[in-house]
Image 1 (tube, rainbow, N blue to C red):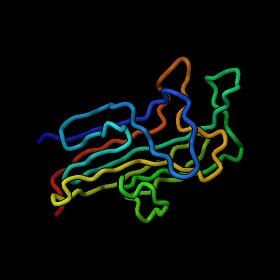
Image 2: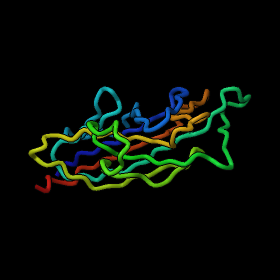
Image 3: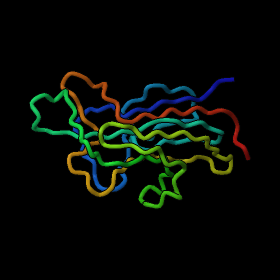
Length: 173
């Protein structure tokens, strides 16, 4: 049996400020891609799953950033960081703040680079043809100094989100 697997990540290629409310993760790096039932839309935000039973797991993190800091390799922290979480949600529902529409809400996290993690089994029925999912992260309305990506002049290996997907078998119709 051949498995469909994929791992998508958001590497920090720039300094990307966080906006109030939910922020879509941008998976700009494909780390693993095998098979045809899992795909990343060219917009880099939407995961496409074709019929099957899947395991999805990953994380999302945010960070404080001070553009005026002398040493850009250091990441500032706070003794009272903003808290938040990530979620996986259908693309069609991504504008909603109602977490009851989410497929899964991640563990609590904060802006000191403590990630929110998700893990879920998900079924895409044959009649659905495909499901389109996005990963989002939020820390509320006050996002001053908080970033979705903080790049380093010496490295592109600051990874702020990753999602691994494994198709386990046929849909549970």
